[in-house]
Image (spheres, rainbow, N blue to C red):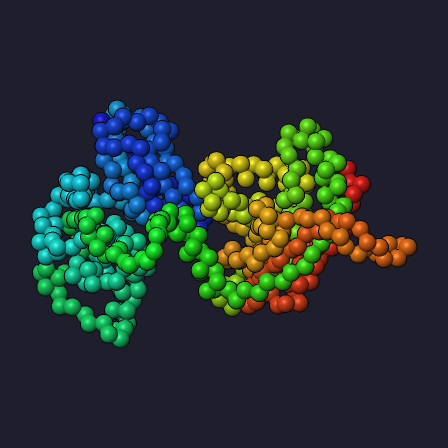
Length: 453
């Protein structure tokens, strides 16, 4: 029988790794072509990994919550074919003879065919830390001993050593960072061989409870953050740390726009097969203003300003669980109002139903968030890195305002809306930010109420 390597797929241009959320198949299970084998997640979107062959799952090489580099072999499928086949060369592949087996409920052992493994295990048998294959490979290549590896402070989940951590350690050691003491190279303190055993022990529930012990006064409920909420929190903190945020506000009289939509929405849906919401109308106005002020459609790389010629509009979308995701309308300036409406509705539906592809959240150059969806009059949105600006639109409310007419000033009931623009003050000064925001408001106010769909 032949075997087929199941590879961690590339999920987007900037995505280099993914986290395993759930295995749908275990070793020994039958699997059909295109049947889901496991669920994975990136910092952008969750995805399913289908089988690339009919057969039986021979072995799996990673556990739930492991972070796996793109291109790694994550499982092996035994087929009935006569010749061994492989999908494509992998970037990171388990050592030959490596098999992931369940030993006990609290311990998973990666067994290898070399006797050297037992030495590494005996010298480090008390370790409770997990090391990904990528970290172990780097350790082997850089002659980092297991003792040194154990001493590296980990910044990953549960104190795990990440790729960044070990590369920083190697760099500090190479250039003699202050406080670093190179360790002697003995038989038990040599570099980690690629064929060495990696004993992965999951901390027991008692250990977790003790380490997480904290005192909370009063009647409280403790809720663990889910994976997406942790990623959102990290992204928001990083954005605030990266960009000096400034927010400008204005208001717009959108009466013409509201009345036009009310007049055409039924005919539009009947003719085009999709609803017309306010979002594509807002995006249309934003696109016109980006063309006038292209500097708000850029990013910063060190001291270089990267002005984006493509206009890819991200639209913040709330998910049923309360989390937020930002699907992107690519080349939005090349779409008419019908095209924008279909893209908006399709991406929003896919986001709420968990059907977004990784590429659907990549490449945004400017973001729109509608805080008015939930009744807010205005908001101070946080920039979606590496962009330099984000526009928030508030709820549309009827208000009594003074308007100018040919006969003079008069009081009228109008549909009013607040707009706010948060921008990166390293790139966008107050004059540009305020001018761009005012320009968007004027586009909305001057909407042609006699426009044909």
